[in-house]
Length: 253
Image (cartoon, rainbow, N blue to C red; front, side, top):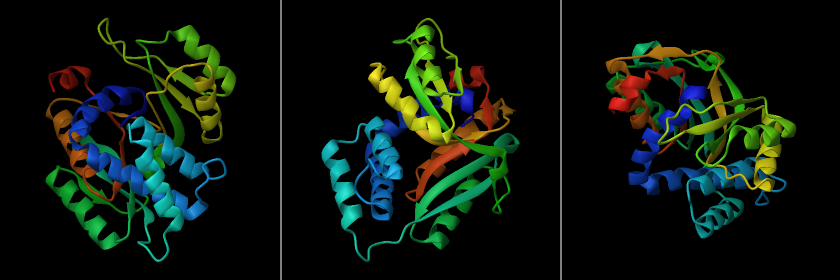
């Protein structure tokens, strides 16, 4: 979802993902296997694998399950040949949607994605339709209920972070600090947080929209439903949108 409002949306999505943990872990396993197969089983020398392992950890995937995925990917010979493919389209409210996938059958996946768009009130586009609206950045979330601004700023800015976006919470739940980095500084900022004893809730190399579109009224529900349907597809790894969701409408969901 949109960069600086992403955590408010993640909370809603995670509530649903808790019910489908097996599906989340399956996606993590696939990403780990593909990374291990492409670059070897050592995360110290295989940055893609390191990122995939970290994302699995943030999803509370057991260490044994992570190790099995690494071993399977590194030892796989003649197995499924997964491709990293990007699909693009438009959602409710004129929002742009970018979908990252790992698939061994593009015909199947593109059909599934097209059907999801059709049912969700959106439309699938050709390659390049909306991808230019997004930039690839590192994005790290830290709980603002546990850490104040001074603690975060001192660590991450010195480590090379581009920006720290203030949480959009309340007295009961302050929300999340959103730390933005360039790709080359992403791992260094994560290491700096770990060394400072600051817990990372979630971190990823994400596609961040350069500009956002305000989404209000019934389009908020429609957009979230479309993203949920897309995320439930087995071949889809990540879904990003430039929709900036109305806070009042989000509170009703």
